Image (tube, rainbow, N blue to C red; front, side, top):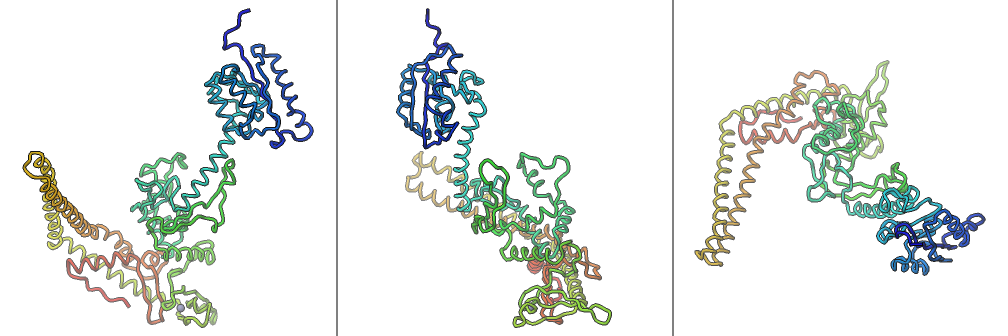
Length: 556
Ligand SMILES: [Zn+2]
């Protein structure tokens, strides 16, 4: 009888393996089923229904671990495969072949297919001939899982240690930058400030320091049309794979504001590894205790000074202590501080003749009698004084605004902006000329008009001129934009005060919008620190430089 086509008959290697180390030879049933003779019997039984397979040899490694492939008979089998003597490998199950599933996978998915070897793992129900798409196609599920499992464990450990290293070096490893920052285009592990969002973050902290509740902050941001972090992310074109909300725009809410207020990242400190997954199989993330977080300071530019951040954390803790329902805040709650020791002032109520007497005292003194003094002040008196000071400040702001408007129309400012325009244009002309000459130099050198030495000297001179012109242009542009900026940003902060120009009683809202802090030294000496202090100072400077300074009354 003629021998059938090669692809239809197989010269099989029967491979058997047993090792006590691997726990193959366990107790009872397992020992029996895994014994060499049992493996062999099972394979013989299988072959009864596979006439196309002829046994070439039996290769048995008794007492060899499946963790590696350094097994004498396994190696002998490979040699026979390479020689082309054997083109089919049969094992009872995959673990007989090897317990290192990555290596085993390499043989089964790569080497055997390349050599045209059919592979059968009987109890795993795997036959490369049946496998969908043949070799290289889909493997049967249990088999694939085994390999994947080993693979994942391996990769998971590698990734974990890799990420751990990055965290320790203070490299940012999040998929997206935290609101307020963006990833540096040249180094995705480095955070740089996103000016727009950072501005919003600053406002949020300022508002909190002013005593606004998180909900009030969220309401204000929504009213001002500020995009929530998620909407902002979308607007700048960062595609989120999972769109949390498809229809309505995500608004600011209590939680998103709180998250920002609690994120230490804004102080330049990177705290990573806050959560963990128990292992690579379980995707649920659990929070780690704070002392296990990997914190690295000064990894990126801060948006919020550490001092302010700490203060906000205190306020947040206070909120939950004082008013868990976040309502019922007194107009100046959270804004009052002792002028001497800078500790917060606390509100006290004592009944007096059927009435209530409310006053504030220094909490530093209250905690420790030996420090500071009570600075006791009745609430009514305090509120009246603060209201009076606020009214004066509003007036001052409005005067300042008028002065600014006058300057805008004044010829001096126009002349100034024009002056910079002229200077910039002139310098740009010089820059262009120098660049052109520098380009021509090389031609001159080639044509023999100048020597190499002259060429180098002249080139250095033009480079110097170019650098100088560029620096000057930048600084002129900066000065010009400063003038324009103070004008355009004016209205934003002035609006906050203008709104309360007719203020007669000090409501909570008005207080937190305008006041940053109230320092109580004594009943006669109260200092109010206002919001937008920097803007106010800048405008004062500006009016002093460009126009008549407004006649502001000095602070009390
Ligand atoms: Zn004090």
